[in-house]
Length: 132
Image (cartoon, rainbow, N blue to C red; front, top):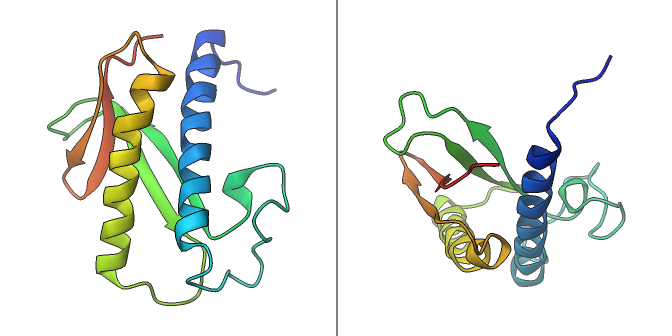
């Protein structure tokens, strides 16, 4: 038997997913030809999900915030799907760009909310008014 999720939670995460899809498109346009894809990874646009193809998989997973200075929120995940070594400063720059894009896009996607994006230790976190 599958898990039943609240309708409003599904709506919330669908809106958030669309934000991450736009960011994925931006990253693919900007960096997609700089590193070879993992051999088992489909080319960009080859699947119905941006998280399943192309160089990038950008998204977030919910964290209850235990041990966090920012509390509960979504931990931002930026994955480059390549066997090549990507220098830490390039990864850092990409993560900073993602955070800046989130700061721009989240108010558009959730105009009735005060949502922030900040560093929480080693990761970026989306937090604030996350009510359903």
